[in-house]
Length: 98
Image 1 (cartoon, rainbow, N blue to C red):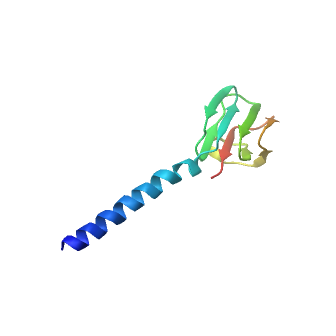
Image 2 (cartoon, helix red, strand yellow):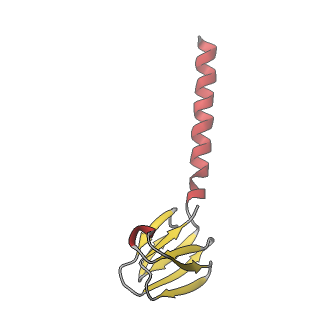
Image 3 (cartoon, one colour):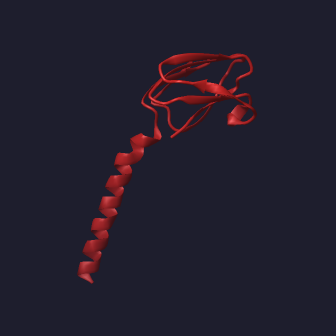
């Protein structure tokens, strides 16, 4: 019984360490400014802009996608590549992929 407990404890610790190290993979490195609000190290997900038209400054290491509706719904309007700026007349939200 002691051997099983030791093995299970080791597996739990290894899993916890692996999950802790992979957390940074769920965020873009850098900063993203949407409608004047800056998001540092933005996590994967959707960010809704405050103003229309939508202004996006992408200074992360990944391309982001712009949609016409809130919560990344509606029409896909375009992509803003890393280290660039985008302006979308009908943009409402931005999706940061993993």
